[in-house]
Length: 309
Image 1: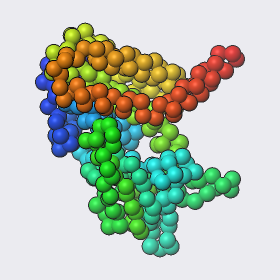
Image 2: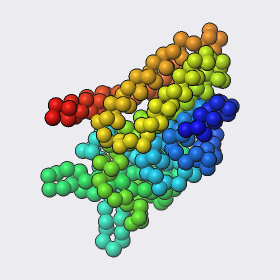
Image 3: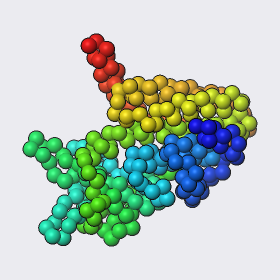
Image 4: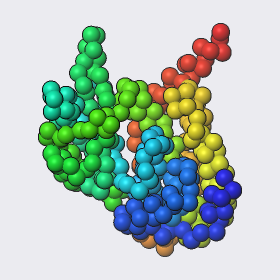
């Protein structure tokens, strides 16, 4: 923690001003900071806009989810399809074709960083069990492999700098060691919702700290941001599916929202484009708000039952 705070209190903010800078700087930071959460915060601090802060948090979250991933590649988590991201909606298929080995076929939509990806982390079905439930697996595939087609999607209304893509897999060969063990939904998809929240919030708060310094906002904002970074950092290693983690994360999200509201009130009349981008892109914090609310309600209920016992 000391090294992270030292960086935030001494480094120059707002140096990441493009996707190229985000990717190259992320690789540099990974050489010095081992914890993905620290890399998320630094990426947010050095980003000149919310979109690049989110990108840093997203890449750090994937590194936390799969610790054996080398930090020098851009990765994409490919879950959502035409029917959404629910396990029942996954139609992309991984199957074994006799002696020819494993093959991947299907389509994914709204893959963040899709056009820039080096490696794709694809959730695919391997069939259904006796109860008719989709059996999901995670497959790691090189984004430039034969049979993979990347279709860039139109910019989103907020954070349009973040690229998205629709991906098509047509008979893509998959090596045995690229098929990850375990149920993809329980091991990767469900935990990622929490892991992503922790790391993206860390990047967002890091971005507030960077803006406070870059735009001469009140020093109290910078100091409050550092305190919230410390709170979020303590959540990063906790079990992502534990109800106590979800309750604490909900409290941290309230602190982050309040901090964002104080930033809104501090911009001067001549703030110009940085303020306009901030106002437009703060909506990223509320993406998946419904899923968060359900997660919190379930956590509260589980904890309540344990207390009653």
